[in-house]
Length: 197
Image (cartoon, rainbow, N blue to C red; front, side, top):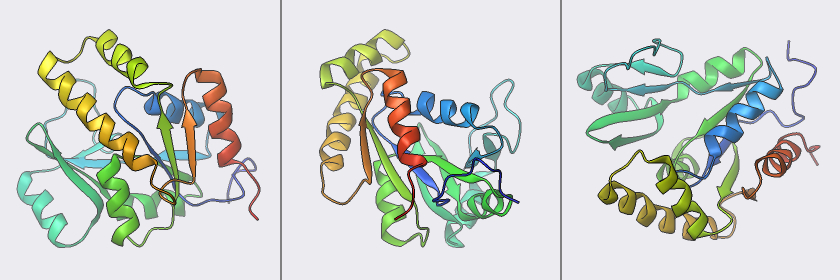
């Protein structure tokens, strides 16, 4: 039985946007504000668990051979390689969470959105989180201090492509500018809970 605060539209919610724009913060705020309503999709990865990471919570940790086998079985709605490790979102994790009455929230990149729209067979709602300006995004990424200059330039180059893609008509159902976290969150929540027509 679905919780009473379940959105009228229970399709999965895809949240996308460039690195550093705050999509993870907004997604977590949605889950925290509505306990028992939403669930993150659990990704598969070939990297080793980091300290404190629990199998099946944020990731399913699998061998490269297992991951390749899952790709051949078309088990993923999207998958990619980052820093030499495979990451993928399985169709089964969405099915499992939906069966529990939860609305699935997916944090995926532009290529994942393209794959999902092209052939995954999953009907979802798409939200793009945008920075107030490219300069603000660069300042935020630099402020994190987690990347060297080369990696930072790669992220910024990727962000330009993602921002351009977001302007393609019909790709995203909602574009939210995250220049103020509370305002952006209210806009996200309003979109998620808007009545179905």
